Amino acid sequence: MDSNYILVKTVVTGWSLPPVDMHEFKVINNGASALVTSYGQIPYGHFSVNVAGGIGWLLNGWFQEVDVTTGTVIFQWSAIDNVQVSNSMITPGSTDVSGTGLYPQSPFDYFHINAIDKTTSGNYLVSGRHVSTIYYISAIDGSIIWRVSSQKQSDFNVTGSTFGFQHDVRFVSQNDTYGHFNLR
Image (tube, rainbow, N blue to C red; front, side, top):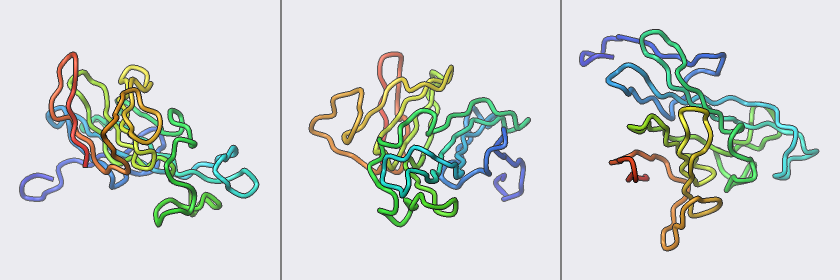
């Protein structure tokens, strides 16, 4: 919408993903593209988190960078393709938003993407709330370049710092050697 709240553009997910989710919609690159999240339930047949019979449902989180003018998907990343369910800090049914994992209507939200930011180098910073981890994702192949967590797997020593279940992460400053980011 413009400054008068008149609809200018509509951005939707591509590649048959579920619709844009409310967790992130960030216009970047001087309005040329947008970062969006999408959630959808998927069957998950190898549960290691106490779902009856070992068969259950996950709420997968995706993010896409979408060209605002054409609707072309520039980049897509999927939590389940990159982060193991065992990294979750919660279990099915343990919170009011976790889901039980027993039915498609109540999929287990093991990852919970909350925020995405794009760096000046073109890579992505992703907040996974239920894994209590910040991921730095390669824009070339979607691989995890590094991760920061005070709870589980971390590529950095965060001794003396504790964070978890963060809601938002944004780069504050960065250069070729380091970056500073804020957690909320």
